[in-house]
Length: 296
Image (cartoon, rainbow, N blue to C red; front, side, top):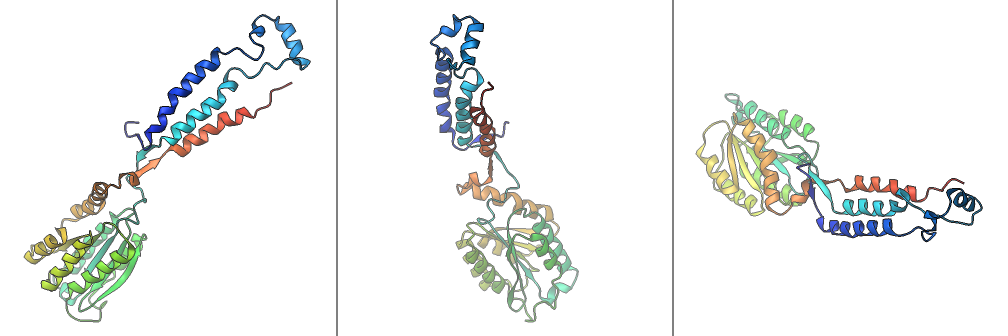
């Protein structure tokens, strides 16, 4: 209960008025004007059996409307708990992985290391949608923005040096295509993850990184080793650099840092589950009792 929050707490200001109304009703005489306290119980029962006296509702039945109202007010106050796995912000934040498919990655197991890091990052996305762009001499969309990240991870693992027919290494084309995907998907805050060996990073790639940052997204780079150009590119794109051995750091970056960034942009309620609907179900119990017919 320590994690419980109220989304609309002002509704609770009505509860003291209900409490006052309960006290008033408990002190108010029944419909017999207090004569029920003076009548002989047998005489009172006989009059009720003849239909000459309506004793009215007392006890819980009389308070059922107020109990229902109290539960409704509590529900409207929006009791909520945080949902760490909530999919509510899937349309606000997306990830585009840009994978180098050039032949230069075939040496020394670089391709396998980058693909492994990419799959770990994809597994950490939870409800964030993602897309995959592959590039060599040109760039292509391998998987458009999707919530089926399991299938995306499988596609990522199948990329090899023959996937892209255009020879060369043009990361700026992959980054430009990633920026287009983020813009067309309408994401408010996205991440672009460039998985590369550093080949082809030049002024054009720097310009593409600046464009991504200008859209409110971040460009991070995953590389097999220490590459100065990658540091500069990530700094321009407002992201970070990860070595292929730093898979857990990459997973944490994609899983936790994105949530914190959206919260700083005034979207905190998107990660809360409103429990008020369940209180409304409880309110149906006293409401149903109001329609219960008294036995003869």
